[in-house]
Image 1 (cartoon, rainbow, N blue to C red):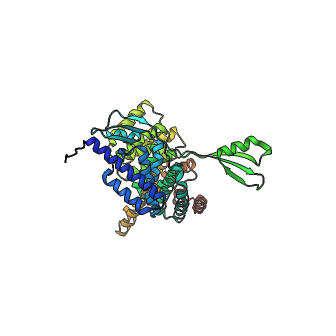
Image 2 (image 1 turned 135 degrees about the vertical axis):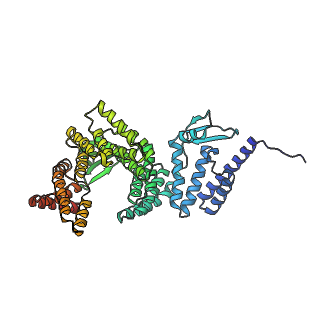
Image 3 (image 1 turned 120 degrees about the horizontal axis):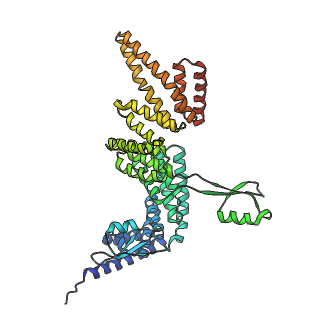
Length: 462
């Protein structure tokens, strides 16, 4: 008997054909509710395919995600199933880059990033429209409702570590059904941050930033003439009823556009990167963020911290001074210079001068007033501890000098704290500090006034 030899290319074709049959069988099995057969067929396909899903043409890849996702979903592994099903939506959102690798295998890369990372040259752009999305609604809708309910219950009871992955789950499920509502992904990142899961929060926020998410949404409302209730309507429905006019069922047509969350995303992500000792990544993101939001004092402040933590303090100080030589009326740069100078005890007087320059240019620069306040006050807790320790040691004359110096600092701090409060009257820290400073400076009327303000603000936060 003659031996049959298959070339590498022919072998690849044979394997691909086998996977195609197995994946098609898995789709048929999951549609019939046969999870065991589905898993068996998928396992057989995966044993030869491994993680090389880029070898599957888009239609087969869609079938694979469909069968795999539903099998996991129906086995109670909702989060994993949702993640696979959400990938179906990515097939329509991204271009498919098609070509052949160095082994002459036909490859299909989903999205430019993956294609670029492959290193394969001469890829051609194609588009693909999924065909199985409409079949998912019946399976997904009940799970979405359950996941959303669980996420909200966990969030409302402050179980943020439970809420975050559930919000991610809702996002993935909706995405699988063709609704890419990134607001749920934002909720996931927010609750991860509240749970102090900084790595997970950073990953979610970076995904949102890279996707161009802003959070801006327009709500369309109108009053139902029959019920006299204000209802939220779809844009098309709202426009239709508005055109009908007085003879229609609705009146009082209004729209409301929510504010952008993009600046908050940049600021929060940078802070998370710095907190997890990823200062170089933070600096890159700050540079990108400041191009979009040049007036963000938060990003500017974090830039100073990131430079300091990455050991580039001198470089940043030199850069700021060069900028100020060109533009001495840049309040933010004066502020940043003050932030860096304040970190070194030897340059704290220079820091005070920089902060004063910042508020001279911008009298409403609340953060500059705040930093000038605390810089002038110094470490008050240490002063009190030093005073008590010195008195206990019987060094009364030295103790008196410490307390007199403290009184002087607190008196000098008061005008700056007042300016801070004027620039930011809703800041609880400013109110609480002024309450104490008025007491130290023996202004009982003001002390009582700010004591009442503090109590009212704390009550409003509950």
